[in-house]
Length: 251
Figure 1: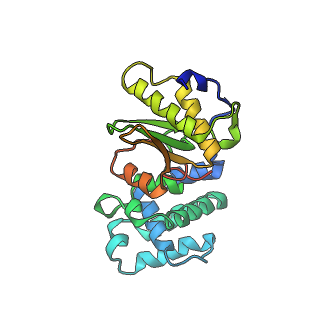
Figure 2 (figure 1 turned 90 degrees about the horizontal axis):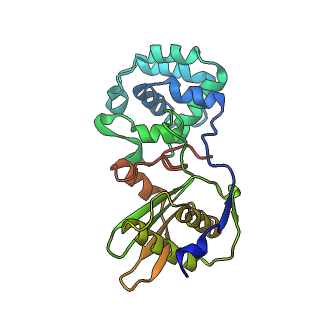
Figure 3 (figure 1 turned 120 degrees about the horizontal axis):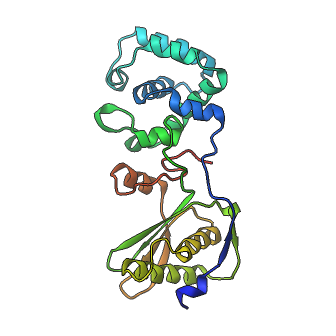
């Protein structure tokens, strides 16, 4: 089966876009990196604290001796409390929700250099602005010679309609052939067929992040990529992409 067999294998709707509401957009720009980190640390071990009580908590913490990470943020608790109080309730609530989301992230992803919170983790929590609309899913094709081709998928499953009936194995082999053609210079990277196949693969498999792996005998397997693995790639700089659920807020 040639690559051309997969042409128009899907019908696509609107692309994924940043769906943050107005309050969430204001929240992502309201605090700097140190202030966001201070709020995250303040809410640790305080799951039931109401958002209107957070400013007073910050004042109390500012009046006590601070150690470790909290001290490393270099934030004046009183000033930060006043800053939060000047925000409307919906924005303050979005900041608190973002801080609680940050506390669910792996510590290795959450913390960056010099004991500050990593920007990509703050973006995932909605506490730092996104530089672009994030991709919903991700497919990477890795050939037997270890060369690879990355295909960000910018359509959610609800916006992908499967037109023809292909098995996952057929799509996997098609993507392998497509990657070989692109990496050999026979096809352009902006070729729609590869993107359509990546959309088809995620829609049919029900997965959000997949690796198509070619073995030395030319066989192809589709493997799920964990969020943790993708976050490691984002952290070490080997993946430069905004991905929903990885380093961008879930939809």
